[in-house]
Image (cartoon, rainbow, N blue to C red; front, top):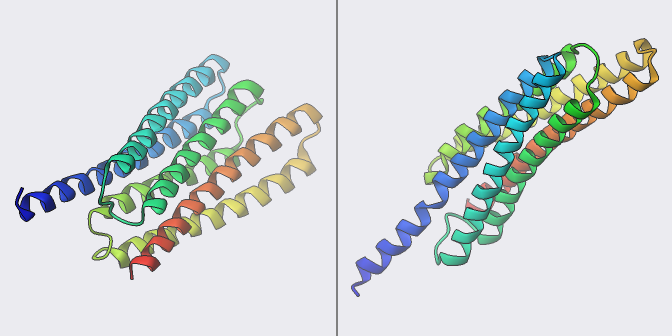
Length: 216
């Protein structure tokens, strides 16, 4: 086999990772959009239906993560460090798992009414999902697109900071105004799950930024 043929095999395998990361990001964004709808929904049955739809996205995400790991096992060339490919796939999968956990809590606890701060927190996750889609779209040439990717990483960090502010504001209001102890516990656990999810989005951005540093 000629050297050019061998190199072509490596290039083809390398390019398999890019669409998988894009698919993962798009999956997270869609799940987050359904989570927003869930936080706005008051009907118990509709909440359950939306939660089940998010579960389907979680199942799809598991398949994407498994595909990335299988590619790692069968590829000689990766777009960046093999451990980082693995860690990034798992970090994105964790974001999806926590979106699902937030949805489950809403469906199981069935809190009364609609809380604007819960909606706001879920909308921040959609924004993070948008950034992930943009970010992974630039993974086809990370060195060339490093500056643009770094800006997106910083955007995700700012989203996480905004989430911290929403969390603190909601918790302060909750303990001052909510007189029903059961409802207080329900809403406290839901906002905590959403805040944990925003934290996990920041983990993804920090990991991507560390990959950029290694490539520089």
